[in-house]
Length: 255
Image 1 (cartoon, one colour):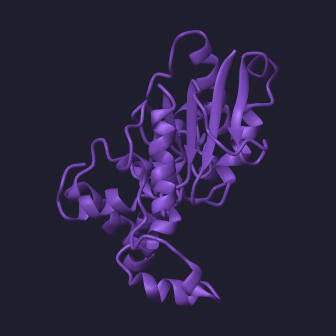
Image 2: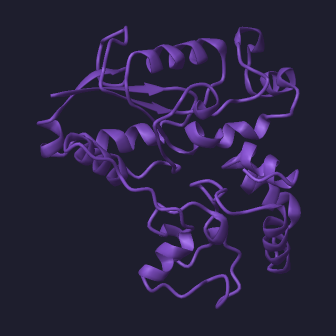
């Protein structure tokens, strides 16, 4: 039986709910034992395990040290969710005076110990596999566990949400209906949920950084502005689900 641990950092816990869903499948229950999971177990110390799932971004020294310890306790570490991969919504405060943030959010800011900038898990430790999403897709987590138990791993698919729309035969809401949609620059994996309801994708799986440069991004943003979004709204959306990637692209760097 494989031993797994689930580590929660700074996040809304949406990915945690999806992991719990993945762990309820009978074939997975029979092959895996949860050794550490603060939401489900009373175990305080993380011991040696086969797989560590890390959800959320790194916001303080304690979390950073804990993740490094988790990395040392396993041969396979998986970053799940857009927070762990790119920083998530909380990275919107990056670049802002952290003392101002603390005074704005907390009634007793002197008790809050956080970094000035949020860090993705991928900036702190070596990550063996990433599963993006806000929240992560529970079926993707379950698929990984099934394949790992058979000696394999998921095959990464480097495509945008548009690929999922095409396979489901959805009419393109951006082209055909003029609805602002971030699908063309967003990592796939959600099943094109929002476009299926005639809503534009808002990029929760993060920016598809594999093949986008500054010129591509600026051209796309210009089109969104033509459809009614202002630049401030676009910036907020893109920073919220991929702050570091967005900054690297707007500076003209290839991620």
